[in-house]
Amino acid sequence: MDRRIVWEFRITIAKQTLSRELRALGYRKLRLRHHPPAQGAIENFKKFPGAWRKSRARRRSTATR
Image (cartoon, rainbow, N blue to C red):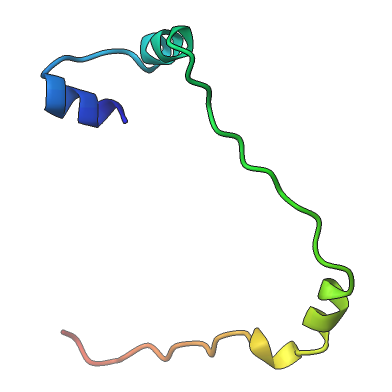
C-alpha cells in the first residue's frame, strides 16, 4: 500500500502514520474470520489419502551443466 502512495503522490510516509491517518478518516483494517469447517468435512478429507502424497526424491544429475 505504501509503495502505491509513493508512486502516485510522490511522497514517503511511515506505515504507522498512514494507519493513524486512515483511522482518523474512519477506515478500519479488515480482519479475516475463519469459519468452522462443515460438519463431517474433516472425516471426508481423511477418506481420500491419495489426494496428498509425498513427492518422490529427485535424482541428482552427475553431469555438470
